[in-house]
Image (tube, rainbow, N blue to C red; front, side):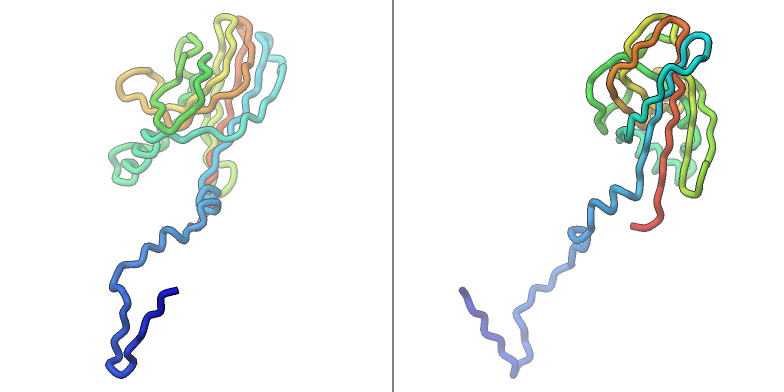
Length: 183
């Protein structure tokens, strides 16, 4: 083991003059808990009888969604625009780099959600998609506009086990974003 001699008479210490990086001491498990999401899907048949309810868990907030949120602080965008639900049949796992669904379910338009703040620090949007044919739904996304294409930004995406729907069936998607103070 190498020993270092210190000269206390000259009061000089051999310490490096450097800036401390305190970010390395951050507890990532706590940081992840500051911002959480959850998606629930309720499947109805064409007569509006509930067939099943699925707690699908958290999705993946996208890079473009985060950029949109940051721009909302400067007034360039409006974060409240994320209220349009879409679903698809793609099975590719959700990733932060996603900009849209893998394969849309082919239904006309995105479902416009009803927005609420059920408790302090929560945002909730509930939107319903009605299907015009039999498909296996296994992905969902939350967007900033009803139209696809130019200007469409996806906030969150979730893939899940197939929910088989028949012509006239609907799925009500309930999305909750919880932001916990701290960190």
